Length: 176
Image (tube, rainbow, N blue to C red; front, top):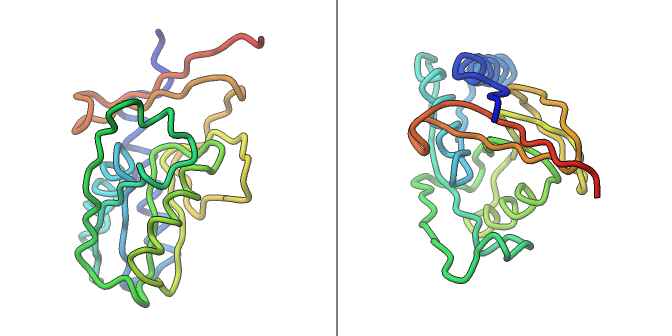
């Protein structure tokens, strides 16, 4: 299976995210919240790049497993992990971070989960990869990489901390 995006291209995408966030938020305090299973790793990498800024940065991890509307992803014995949001959500400027934006359903679930922690002043969305094909009215505020795909394709993101390597593969699916 050919690699569609290399480690260098992923790093460049994360750099683009960090720079866009830096420019748009202009030193304001922000809270990055990564969606568990790769969005959290993307958020950590963006946070590392923003750490040199003279501003208040907060970091959290959100597990959305119980908020999803596609329970087949949970299988018979779901591996639920804790969310870890160690800061006050009320009034925060939150940037929700995920690895891939596709239909928008994961982000809808994340917004539902986030509301259980309080009411932030603002929520924005940062994604490493935007592959299009939305089913919901959700659009990223920050995009690292725009990756054109067919609706039926699978985009497999592997990240160093989670998977041992940085790469993105697109598995093309023939139409039915």
